[in-house]
Amino acid sequence: MSQELAGKVAIVTGAACGIGRATAELFVEEGAKVVIADINDDAGETAARDLGPAAIYQRADVARVEDMDALVAATVQQFGGLDVMVNNAGVSCKPSVSFLDDELPDFDRVMQVNVLGVILGTQRAARHMAKHGGGSIINNASIAGLIPGMAMLSYRASKVAAIHASKSMAIDLAQYGIRVNCLAPGHIPTDLNAFTPPGARPEVGERVQAAMKPVWDANKPLKRQGTPHDVAQAVLFLAGDRSAQITGTVLAVDGGISAGDPVNHFQELMAARASALAQGA
Image (cartoon, rainbow, N blue to C red; front, side):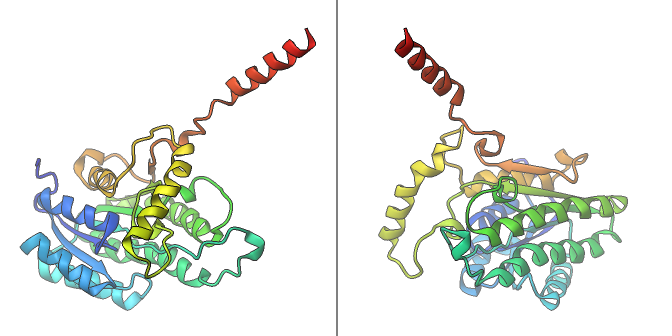
């Protein structure tokens, strides 16, 4: 490893599993001290133990001001500073096929975690960074914040808000040498987007994912399956000095989904034209 983050201290929220854990693991490999923040105590403590003395676990609900204040304070006390903040924690909403039938049962919680959590995490980290030479803040959004779509409106709206808030905070905090960037992962297999019923057996989840994969791949130019590690590599880039001139941007890690539909409609149109002309000949 290049030890790209040697000497740096980072917080990663939602780091007990998925993209957050992959990010924490990569950060430690690259020389950082990492605070794993989550509300899943068992998984969070396990992750910290697995990563050794360079990591600790701190319980934190990102939507609670008190928790975020305590998180930053514990980080500075344990490791002596804070250079990188990764606001990765997020929740999805209950799947609903039709907007007309969506009673928005979890709207408030989705907004609290996905929007307020990003804002609080950025603000609390920035308050320390502004007095200590700056830093890098990476907020995890989603391609759901870039591309409109049917259903799951609460989640989509929260990710749009997270992106817009990140850009706005980037402008505000640039004067302190603090960079704020946003990631937009797409179709990365994690517990968040498993669409598996709660409590289902592992084999059920595997069947659900296998059935959905062709649908996920249909609008993705790159057919390779993305992984949490792929996203972690993008976080590493935005956290380190290689991206020193980058702020206020959104980096999609989505296999090209946000670039456009890979279906060649022009070929379909030309085929239809040829068929019509042949019928009239």
